[in-house]
Amino acid sequence: MSILKVYDTKGAAVGEFDVPDASLCLGKGEQAVHDAVVAHLAACRAGTASTLQKGEVAGSNRKPWKQKGTGRARAGYRQSPVWRGGGIVFGPKPRDYRVKVGHKVAQLAFKRALSERIAAGDVRVVDSLSLAEAKTKILAGVLKAMNLGKGALLVVDKMDEALKRAARNIPAVELVQAKDVGVYQVMRYPAVVVTRGGMEALRARLEGRTGQAR
Image 1 (cartoon, rainbow, N blue to C red):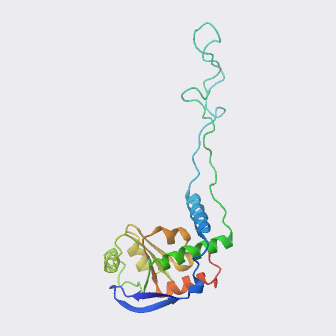
Image 2: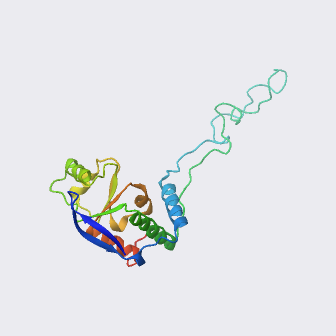
Image 3: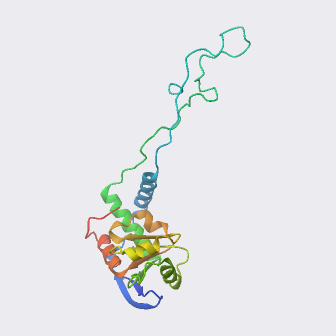
């Protein structure tokens, strides 16, 4: 059983949170994690790059000069790919880069990713992340007290508007609900800070007691 210490906002230990070893997945799933991260990054691509082929470049079909007698190479039209300003050969066109990841693969990827972070000691459980005021300075002080200056993923069970407003201006900090956490987010940040309620939701996902998997 993995025992995670629970801290308060000042960095002092106030309890423990147990994660059964049976809930963790460390023996398989490396490829699933890779596939899930690749799929996420691919889905983030706009896919709007577009070039003009020779048939799409504006211009007439008139020969730029006569076929013979000029001493220049033969040319049939201004839109030729060999000309500057002409068409592009095999250039990019708008496309959808999304990659499909199966539901079971996504579940396995999430279990492996979170299990790795727990085993590595990168997951820190806090009793609560509620703030008296929606101020970035207050949250920055909380993160500093927990020695999280390099950034962190903040996971809560329910979204708090004050916390949301306080977190949005801090670089390398992302706030997300436990039910919406994805594999890429789990792997991206140096540390994962989870409220006690959020950890309950994450443990439920590890044990397959919810349909959430991303």
